[in-house]
Image (cartoon, each protein chain N blue to C red):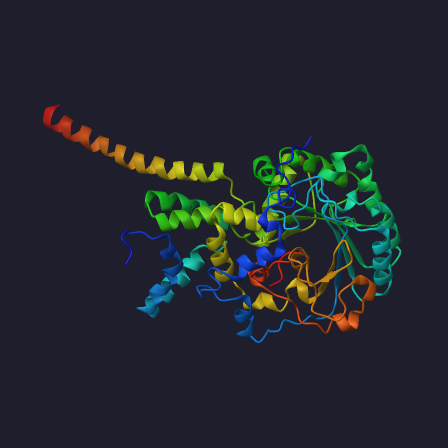
Length: 111
Length: 354
């Protein structure tokens, strides 16, 4: 057993989850693959969204996968970093917007 | 001016300049331990071992390893310090073959083929043979490297040459990182020169295709999407047009193998190639319809085997003994580098194959 929770080599084993629940595993991968097909959004745009969400979810497997996916699609490092900032901005904005709740409470109690 | 990145592995006397050492690396480690299946085992599963040629379609001739660039991932290990150049005598032998071959495509490559002193004579003579598609793989910067090359676009046009050129990205940073400082600007200028005389324009018979290969340890994405992105960016930024983009996978040999090992990406890259193995690509890999001729006239299944010095497994091994029927009866020589041609949609000098 690995002595760390995350092992980069585990990403290659992701497909193995179907071994313990084939039907659900296959449904997930079918859904996943359909999501990333070209649609109203291009596969390139979806890759950048996935990269941003990988960071907000703090998923190291996803960050590895979508950094590589971006390179494969010719996405530049500037585009990738901008996408990460979008995720980070939403994350920080999501924290900060709760400041309104704090202000509401303070104003109610001590206004 | 372009600024060269480095010297060839040969000049540096790197152990990887030795093709046997490269083959040793490709056969040992994760393949010897059984962690990854050997290419032979993989194609045996689908009844394609031994791999056999189909009808010969492409005659690819490497007229020398000398080049004005030293690209980071060059599988030829080409550069200004390489002195291997095809002689006029060997070209003459090639011309005899070109006149009689059943192949519909003649594909001249290098190095920078234009640096061979007999290049123009060879093109003039070869163009008389009536081959349907006559390709010259031009690195673009050679056209701007010296005044004596400035008229190459006109020369290509005169002989109805199909120009195929490498372009790793539509941005300066990524292109120069792989191919040397200044390469992007010179390539753009050369493409504009080619466009100016009709190359690459919509409905033009003067064919101009670009080759994309990844700038690092990753595989190319979908060829059609990449072509769309390249066309949009080159048109918007530089008003440049071209016909097709060929997405080519970097094979783990020569300078790219050196890069993979030095950057500690070798094993992950081999895993990526094996994971992306596509059995449907096997039947159409380029060695099934191509013969590669080296600067000194030896025959190979492909340009990659040429660089690994894996000559054809046939009684006929040299252009001086060329016999298409005998050659077509050979078994194709394979090793683990062949995974590069069967990954994803497959890869060849003409782009994807599956």
